[in-house]
Image (tube, rainbow, N blue to C red; front, side, top):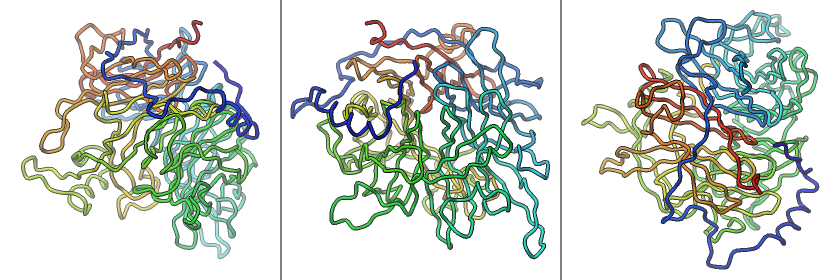
Length: 563
């Protein structure tokens, strides 16, 4: 499926006209899809293996063993981050594969490969800290990469210095990897990487989250930087061409910490963005979440704009505002991860102030400095003498759900809420622990804390999302929770379908397994995991070291296509 993307100038007119044509609910109606009495059906999809633990990593004798959530385009081309396990050798990289029979896995980039130009130190990649993303209709891929400094140069006083420890890297079609953005904005000759609109030239500190990329090769990303000692953030873009350094085009601004929040109510004064989130794109449009305060927002919301310098921001969903088509109070929380196909926007949101408490034990794997900080140094951590572990407790909204917003018709749907589930948020202790520094080894370059994330992906009004079902015990821990991936067609007001749930037989997903060999223990879906007819997920069966796992692809037919 390839959808014509409306120009932003036509978007406002279409919103007004179409909103008058869509039938409205009565005053007491809530546009909700899944009813309590409805029993979810199992979606019988035919799954193909993109990669699993039996697949060799290209150019090695190692097998894949651990996977991040994949992204897919409307051609069915899948890109994903994966690594090997169970060996003294280590291989980590970004890979892609076409769905056609006989297609082999291609390397987008991997550790120990030389970072593309600018690089006069022969520096190699050390990590890819976030999932890759792919353009909607073509095979352009963008990802972040970490490494040691890549460029040596001399200051005016002839002092030698080195720079560039992280960046955004892209592959345009089948062309070689190239540098899209880098911490080299204040290096002579590479001014096009600088934070726009600031003099003297200023480099970015870090590029948190995953960058998006368009069909024409424009990367759109979140960037953090420090101006006169003040940390700032924003959403930026840069047009790339397939020549070294990504071409001559400069980074351009969409919105940043100096941008006024457009939907601030009268009398509130001038309120600017205090946080922004990694954006999503379709055609020449970008959507992103911007808030005054990330942890406790009073203003902000979801915005759409043209990908052009300093564009007009149009509010799609605002903090404190009701959504058209839904008889629920105004939103008090909005999730950062947005899935957008050019017409439909999927996101997590919460309303009201009622909460429940959940306990989160400090991570036992991952970055050593972060783990050490969580275990007793973080002032929010508490010691549990029963388990001998440190934990923190978080307040989770009781009223939360997965929303789908029709941008053309100015109409919202509540695809799922806690009527049928117990939670949509999943937690990760991420960020930069004190003392780490901006050396490219930390994941985000933002203060370390527990961050809750919801996972969903939308295509033509069908939304796939991850949800948890389970009871909390008196320690605020979920008892035998079931995590699943579910499908709802909001345009048909249909009951939800179960894609897969933990505990199901892994052989139902991976045809290379024997029935009953491994149960599914973990499932992953990301914002670009469902594009056109193609759905791609990650799954683990058993445990990571002795079990099985992989990246899988299926074709989903909508009911609309059969009419």
